[in-house]
Image (cartoon, rainbow, N blue to C red):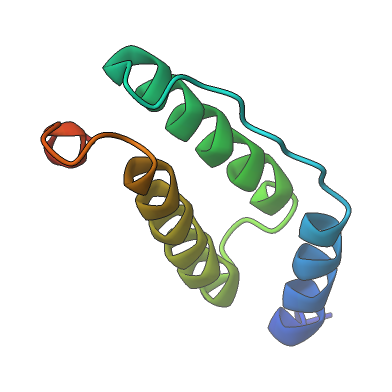
Length: 86
């Protein structure tokens, strides 16, 4: 039976809605920022793991990670070069 990529995408987004990820970190500490980003990425990857090979989900995963990376970095001081290291 062929996989239904759209149904999997729906299941993936439902799984994301059930996640309560709250990141607490010191935005002035580069290591803490990197750990927060790594934790966020791991949670998103874990939600996507049941759907290997689904390109729709892979695209959403990358978009989500970039969105949250940016949000995390925006909390860090402007003069920090955190964005260039990840």
